[in-house]
Image 1 (cartoon, one colour):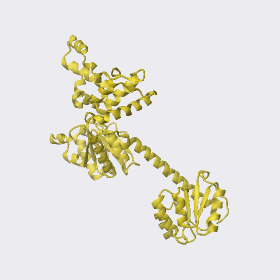
Image 2 (cartoon, helix red, strand yellow):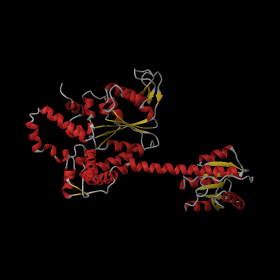
Image 3 (tube, rainbow, N blue to C red):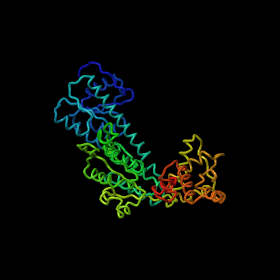
Image 4 (cartoon, rainbow, N blue to C red):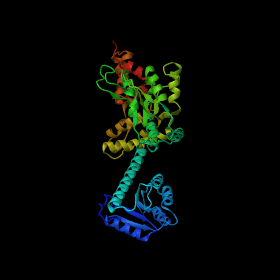
Length: 461
């Protein structure tokens, strides 16, 4: 080893380096170099002594000689891979060769250094090893945060049907199969889709949600598959489609039942061939995407009626997960109320209010046609409107408490001699406004499909 000075890494004041060598002089020399650079050091003179220190969680990085009496450096690596897979290991040897370097890297060594080496070379490798360790710790922290925000922990369920569904989801998450999530609007199908992604091996890849019903019919094909410049009048530049954007991740096709038959055919080809050709392009792009679809429609009936391709249905429904409506999950309502009260209060910057007994009873037995989304919206309003730290029924939306249907209101409409069609249109508009113009939720509350709702909202010619 030369004695040229090395620069300590940014992590030196925090890090402990374990030096392992059956040569006591080598342990002492390396420890001196590391301490001068600002690192704390530990010494071990055998692989077994090193393992005892590692099991106590003491070192942040380990430097080991390759050839030692008893347990070799490679033997130590094999044990470390079992008990401390995230501990960075640097192997030192005077018998460097390509073969031993490859073997060390296969066993998980961060790096490999051959005697003689300079102090600066050693310190640089140690600094890089600690940077790599810090990065891996941060990635793990982010994964835990993602799992907390998007995984099963964020899905509140005590109902047996829901707990069985979550068990099925956990089993399916690790696979690459396509999943179809069915259920009424507002039941939380998007939460399940996100949980499937973030609990899967694809969690580092993108999660790309697409609301098939919200994209105009003329643009859906371009949005999904992309287009080449000049493919149509407004295509002033090329555009990557959402399939390419989701590569190595998950594409979530929400409300897939609204997709046009012509787009269904192209979607089937992309899923089967794993290649996509943008509109107006001559070449194809390979994509690696897991498809999760969701619908509030009866796709099997749509298949029987010829409105949805049977081959596409069987392709996307390798596994089907049916989410029960909130009215069939009475055990979950008190838990969801507590959860949404805390969230809405935090957003409003006020302490969570209490619910009086009458309001609690009412919320528990209400049918919730808009499901979880309707419950969340109702409690957001109640938190904002309540006074005295207590929510009463008067703080809830009128559509829930039935004020829209009061005799006085009906008498007013009758006195105006309004045709039934206009009454329906006025009520549909009121419901739509109450759910922030979310047409899927409004349609669910009214008990009609989206197309019928659109028709009722239109003024007569």
